[in-house]
Image (cartoon, rainbow, N blue to C red; front, top):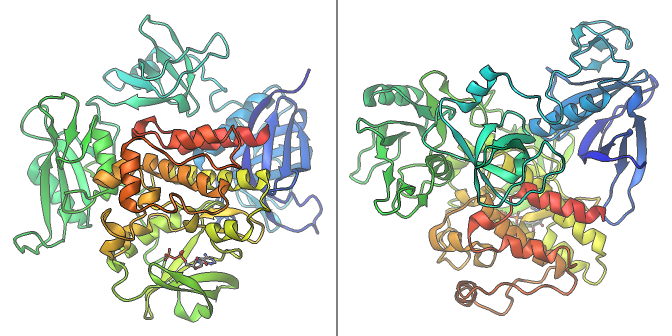
Amino acid sequence: MYPRVILKGTLIKKSQQKKRTSPCNYKERFFVLDTQDLKYSERRPGKKPTLKGCIELSRIKCVEIVCSDVPIPCNYKYPFQVFHDNHYLYMFAPDNDCRQRWVRALKEETKYNNLVAKYHLNFWMDGRWRCCNQTEKLAPGCQEYVPLGYASKKPLPQTPDEKMDAYDGGQRMAIALQDYTPQDHSDLPLWKDQVYVLIDSSNSDWWTIQDDSGNTGFVPSMYVTEKFGTNFERFEWYNKNITRGRAEDLLMTEGKEGAFMVRDSRQAGVYTVSVFTKAPGSNGEKNPRVKHYQIRQNETEESTFYLAEKYLFSTIPELIHYHQHNAAGLITRLRHPVSQDRGCCQDLTQPSQANQWEVDPQELSLGQVLGTGQFGLVLEGRWRERKVAVKMIKEEGMSEEEFKEEARNMMRLSHCKLVQLYGVCTQRSPTCLVFEFMESGCLSEHLRARRGRLSQDIMLGMCLDVSEGMAYLESSNFIHRDLAARNCLVSHNNEVKVSDFGMTRFVLDDQYTSSLGSKFPIKWSAPEVIKYSKFSSKSDAWSFGVLMWEVYSEGRLPYEHRSNAEVVESLNAGLRLLKPRLTPETVHPLMEWCWKEKADDRPSFAVLLHQLASISDL
Ligand code: ADP
């Protein structure tokens, strides 16, 4: 019987240093876990994968996450370990969910092995275990190993108490995003757009739901989304019993532009958004203050909420999520959720160190010009022993204060398919942004320069790379807003990375930011962006469809001979870009899916990545 594949994907692997003298390095590898082995291979666009290693599952003695206190020197920041034979394999996942998936699956497949009783929870480094200071690499572990501390692939049935917790005080509902055919008796079928009772979503891969007839079963979490009612207690921005005065005190104390919360209004069943700002008001007031906006409900359609009339949402969490990314009628974007129990929530929004993004001008040297961009010249440079690209910001070109606020968040976005922002140098003029250097320049030029010489593998590899970077941005709740081949860059080994994410928010040129402006990227923009500036990961998905079109037409300009106005007209008439000659039959439906009129009907990047990876495995 052939082994069955359980999980596959790209991870970074640290060299196992089986000999004392073997080098320490970090390499990207494509891992495949099947029912017999854990295999890893090197994948390069246009080349056949080469198998680099294979570990029989029966030899594995421990699988666990690594709790590390040291900075991780590669792009994937979530380490875990596999102890097999007498070797430690350290792997790094791009995010915690991905790490949990691998650890869970590996634990499940090795649970009947001869396992260790104790393990090391930190790294072996510089000749010692960082957790217990033992200096023998094979010294017994210091922490009890729990073989199935995580749920098995599908979670075990819950105890009644746990069930009550999962209900969270009220009934939770889920909507199917697409049909699902059960794979075994414990699954439940899904019908797109049908609503189910959500029983348990604590497992990141498999949710438990109940259908109309009372049947309960598992479904892949990727196929469903939670439908929110008015049970917001789980959201960090919601403060249940708080007065207007106390809300103002908390937000004023926080004192950060865009600090906000949602609270109950005095009027029953109505909610208010309170937000702190220092921005000058329409009647000239300049003092830092808190503004209150009531969340209104459309009279005719019961489930339509809005803060600013033009932007309507079917749930309050969706409305808040949207205004976290778009001011759209508010005095400022909702930036920092504040909770009376926890203060300002730390996660993505807080720097761990002040000014950690500041690049010391002494450490930065500048070289030749690479090109000109929206913000000004881009130069080659050197910073801390590495080649970098430096964007010089021309005066009046960028809203610098806003950018500095965001730079820390952007620097935390770290993925091998994103062009890394290393830091910002504000101490000399002009201000400059320091990025990872990409030898082969921008993707659109790269495509044009190689017309007629691009193989199907290479083109699919490009789409796959971009979808991977975008799936990471999507999972970080970050919207690109200007995804196009011109905003992707190519590395020395032909890897494509997504660049310039979120940067349009800081452009001060109206011609570029207004959908009526001559520089606005209409040809890459979703209809709701053109009409209402409504950006989301689903509007990024539309742009991704156009990017795939650019790849398969070898860098041609979309709607080459048509004006923006003509493009808008043909989109309104339901017309779409035609299939480029080189597009495989398997890829074209994905482009069309990205160009669905309604944002909700478009695929997420997680789904796009999955689909493209399946095509590349064919
Ligand atoms: P902007 O986003 O400010 O409009 P671009 O990103 O388009 O600027 O940069 C202009 C040019 O500079 C690109 O076409 C590319 O040739 C070069 N460039 C930009 N970033 C990098 C980088 N990280 N590595 C190498 N070259 C780069």
